[in-house]
Amino acid sequence: MRLNTVRIPFKTGESFTLIPVGDVHLGSANCDVGAFKEVLCDARDDPNTRLIFMGDQVEAIAPNDKRWHAGGVDPAIIDLAHQDRIADVYVEKLAELLAPVADKIIAYGDGNHEAAFTKHYYTSISGRVLEAIGRPDAYTGWACLTRIVFDHRTRKRSLPVRVFHSHGFQAGRLEGGKVNEVRRLLAYIEADVYCQGHSHSKWVVPQTRLETDVRFTRLVAHEVYTCHTGSFLKTLQQDHVSYAECAGYPPTSTGVVKFVLRPEEDRVRIIAVQGG
Image (cartoon, rainbow, N blue to C red; front, top):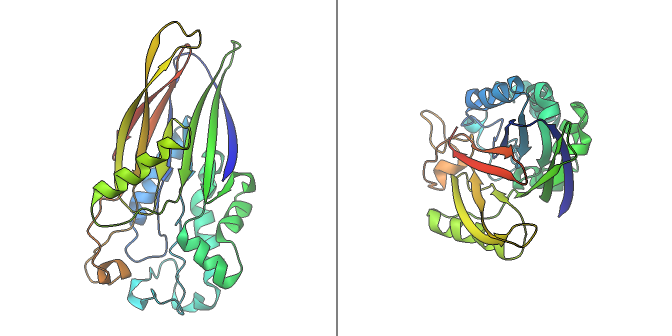
C-alpha cells in the first residue's frame, strides 16, 4: 500500500469536489463513453474538482483472453486494423481523454484488468498513460492512503483529510456483502473516506465515530464514509454480448459518487453525494 500526500491551497469559504472514478472499461462496447466524457468535462471546467482513478480504466482484453468476444469491443477504440497493437491504442485513446484534466488527478491506481494485462504482456498501461499526460507522480498502484492537506492561503492553518482507495475485491450479486466487507476496513485502516471499486456498484454508507476535539474538552461526532465507486460499463446493452451478460451479472447504474470537501475553522466537513 502506498502513501500519497496532496496539498491544496484554499481560502475561507471554498469547497472542493473529490470524485473517485471507478471501472470505466474504455474499449468495451458496453462502456458509456459519453457519460465518462461528461464527468471529465465537468472536472476540467471546475478548478476545485480533484479526481482519483480507481482501476479498470480500460477493458484491456486481448483476443487470446478467455473473456474476449469480438462483438464486445468498441470499434471506435480498438478497430480491426489495430488488433496487433492493443496496448498502444489504449494508451493513446485514454491519454487523449485525460490530458485536459491531468492537473486534477491526485491518484491513479490499477485494477484487475490492468494487472492481468501487465502480467501477460509485460507492459503497464497505467504507467504509460500517466507518462503520456505528464503525471507519472500520480501512480498509486493497487491500494493507497491519500492524505489531502488543505493549506489556508493567508492564515497559518492546515487541515487534512485521509482517503483510503483501492480497486477492491468485493463482488457478488447482493449489496449486503459488499457493504459489510468495505466497512470492515474501518477496523484496521484509519481514514475519513474509504473507496472501493471492482463491484460496479454505486453507493455511499456513512459511519459515525465518537471522538474529542484537539483540546480534549468536548465530545465530537465524526462521520466517515465507505463507498463503492460505480462504473461506466453497462451490464446489458442491445445488440452487444459481453462476458458480464454471459455470467448473468445484474444491471448496474453508471456514473460516480462524489464528496464535497469544505475546509472550516478546525476540520474539513465532508458531504457525500451519491449519483452523478
